[in-house]
Length: 222
Image 1 (cartoon, one colour):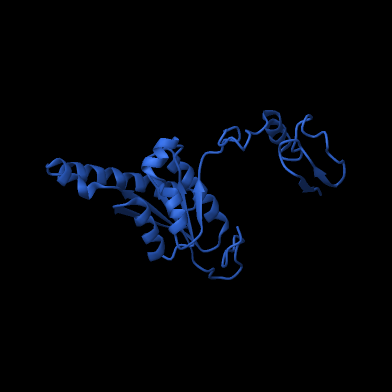
Image 2 (cartoon, rainbow, N blue to C red; image 1 turned 30 degrees about the horizontal axis):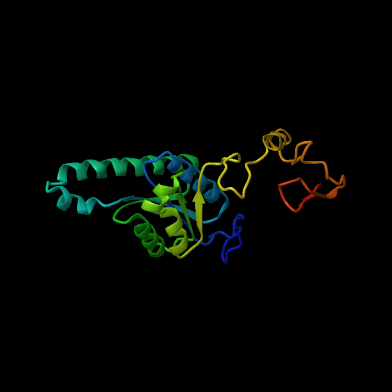
């Protein structure tokens, strides 16, 4: 990612520029991946500070819909939300004790609150998670991640679970199981299995043409 002002290398000056990472979480298991990814970025960016936000959606409209006092459930939900933020904040400080960590609890429309906070704190990078909804659920619910990616005032990283065998579309084939095993066993030194390496040109600077995978891949070997 080539972004103006983006400097992932450790700054040698005594006071590196401030780099604000905003991490949006919810109560799902995917939030752990989001926080883990944010920690990974923060470790290699000088001057990084972590802001973690959780948005409680639609609670302000609940009393009028059910005709009941919402004070007890709201208190419980807010306590649970604060506990979620506290756990996430502690996991960051455990990994990076010197990093500044700030948690934010908000209420309202998730994408709007996340984007507004990103603008308010001058975020340099926003991380959001995504859920593997079906087609109907995506149509009805929309996607907080995609809306944040479109409207945020800075780069947005959408964090999802890695699944190289996932058949996402009819146009994209799942990864070859044998190729994936070869890459894992050789730590990327060999990219293709025997069947897909038929057109491999053996050279230190070489091009590979695995069938159904790509027009060509170039690898510079030491």
